[in-house]
Length: 345
Figure 1 (cartoon, helix red, strand yellow):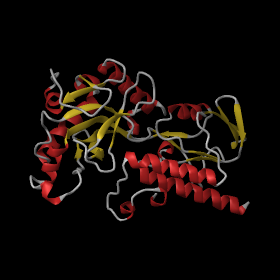
Figure 2 (cartoon, one colour):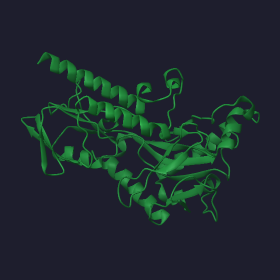
Figure 3 (cartoon, one colour):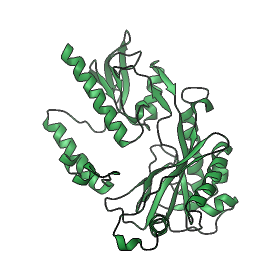
Figure 4 (tube, helix red, strand yellow):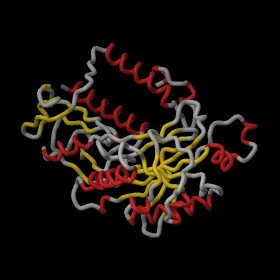
């Protein structure tokens, strides 16, 4: 990454951060490098079919009309490409249910979080926006934890389908925005669902409820932390970084019991750990549903699908990685497996 423009500090920092503003140029540099190596990148192309003969990949189809003949396909489509899971399911590619987590984003003034973590003399030290990592084991057995903490960052719309709303977080490189946010999510087990794609359907149901609760146009439902715990609707909301805007809602009506109650108990517990965390200045925005894939594309030690030779599911969408670094490592390992195979041919 440093080679393509990332700051050298990511090599030695314990918690390296690049920033969305820097990442845009880095990705462009990576793309140009790939193209210089006689590779082609096609935009506006959608995988619409895969061609399988005798349990072996023979090709794929793009946009329903362009066929590519190949016996190797690296499937690195991410955890939100739901159409790909449906395609694989119709092709009888081996899939498994997989645990994941859902919940909301919580946002506080950055100064508040900085003071909780660093103390009131924080400005003396010239340090970055404070981070936190919180965990809680509920009486139901579900885990609740903070995820993807973005100091000095923004809550963003990460929706990928019409009339289905989900959120995420991001920070610029300096992490010096006025607010800090993190996901607060509750674990969902594969045992909570009967069929392979039921986890996806559960995500969809929450995203549709969130879209409706916000009133449409991707206005996000939001609620003060204190109001959520008290099951009351706000007459006004704190300033929030989410765009286009937020609307006062009640997550007690959006989230199912199995998610809502552990989340409420966890927030109360987090407030005892971080004095000031539970405050009217804190706002919940939702829903957060894309923590990881709800489906695993089953593969063997060669990284190939167990029932389709030549199909290499990789990264978060494959269900074997959860995050930027682990997905990158997964991709490198898959590439090494493919190179080893080609060298033997």
